[in-house]
Image (cartoon, rainbow over the protein chains, first blue to last red):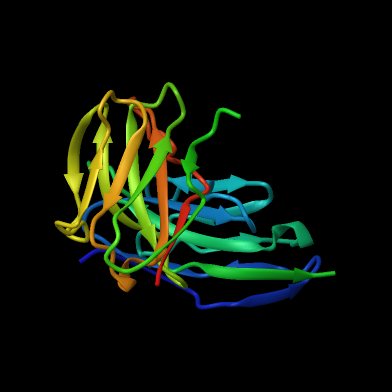
Length: 112
Length: 115
C-alpha cells in the first residue's frame, strides 16, 4: 500500500546549520508530493509541493526535489533559524485522489 | 480571520459519551476534509465532502463516527459512545476545485480527550 517514511526526530540544530529531513514514499503511479509544517500552537501549513518527477518545490529558503528514481522528496534548508522550529510532515496525494497521506512528522528545534 | 476554524479547540469527555465537533471552512471552498492525528503520528484521512455530498470515507471511520455538511458550508463530526482510543486531534481542512492542485488549508484542530 501507499506509505510515506520520514526521518525520525527530534532533530536539534544550531542556528545557521544546514538542514536535511529525509522522506521516501511508496505509491503506485505518479503521486504529488508535499511538505507541510506545523508551528507550535498553529495548524498545518503547506510549505512546498512538487507534482511531477524532477520538479523542485521551494519556499522560505526550503527546497525539496521530487526524485522518482529513488522515490524520495528530501527537505533541505541551507541555514536554519530559530523561527524554523516546528514539526515537518512529508505527504503524498495519489493521482485522482482527494486526500493526503502523511508521514509521522519530524520535530525540528533550532537553538540560538 | 478568513481561515478554517474549528470549535471547540479542546474537549474532555467520559467514555461512552457522545461528542460533536464543528468546522467552518474558508467561505469560497467547496471541498472539506476531516483528518485524525494521534500523538506522534501524522494526520490520517477520515472523510471528504464536495459541497454537501460526502464522497469518500476511510475505513478508519467506524459506525460510531458520522459527519455531515448539510448546506455545503460548515461541517460537523460526531462520535457516539466515545472510547479511550478516540483520544486524538481532529483536523479539518478545506480546498477549492480547479484544474490545478488546490492547497488544503487546515484548521487548528479539536483535541479530544476521552477519560
